[in-house]
Image (cartoon, helix red, strand yellow):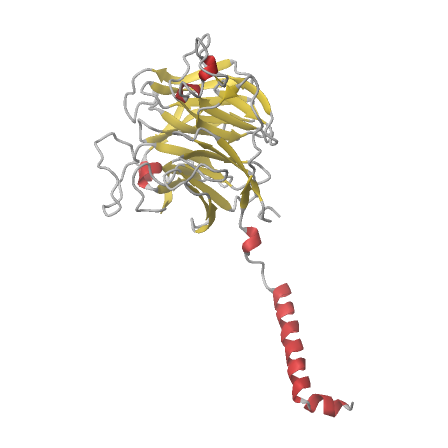
Length: 382
């Protein structure tokens, strides 16, 4: 067919135009700067086989804390005393049933769910906490443990094998939010490796973040909401229609340190994350599910393990979901979870951690008393 006839054909012209448009689109896609797509956002699938059955007829209670160490091992702090008599029936005298026996409060697992190490509880030279809450493991080989019972106003430091090293504060009555020697039912800790500093979300009794030297326990600094001096004046219950509170509520439930020096703090019952520099200078705050009452919408946080820590995952134990946030602006780009007791659902999801492969580990309190693993299923770490 002559070229002139081909070009003049209406059908041929349409096909030619389509080809040009497709070629232009392909060139534009190659030349355009990369932007986030659905594959970049973390998505997850529960692993119902994790962890493996515990030895020794052991069972765990409420999960007070969970963290992942530099080796990719998962450390769990649970509450043996939260188990009911029917749950720990084999430990009674006489035994009530074949199962079970409370596991030691500190449990170390590998990523496949094998139990590697266990210890904890009262011992010589220290007082164990009344209700286990919060666990952190640093690269120097130390484990930090707190509690939130009435007199749990201290932090305990152990070796990886459970040998007692040091205590900050006392297992004694709380004082106030500006006492630098005594804590107030601390909820969680975070380690600044370079500065060798311990940040404390303090907590269920006090209304502050406080920082100590991680080796000597010496006080460094502390601050309250908006970077101001904390106080313990009576504070009305959270009301989404009222002006925002100028003090943290109780509990100040988590503290996380990002690689860029930002400090993220969970003000749990006031449904907000406040963000600071390491010296306590306030940067900004984000609110989530502001109509949430009860136990609040911001229980724990975990930083995404890519170099930029692009995302921040937020555990919400009242709405029983995990939100995926863009760390640059706090926008919600995804999430998972639902109220319930089936695998992948939550009842009071209390604590959360992420390993370097992007797998998420969660722990629940109240009557759920379990840990779960959620495997990364998207290309969010490519």
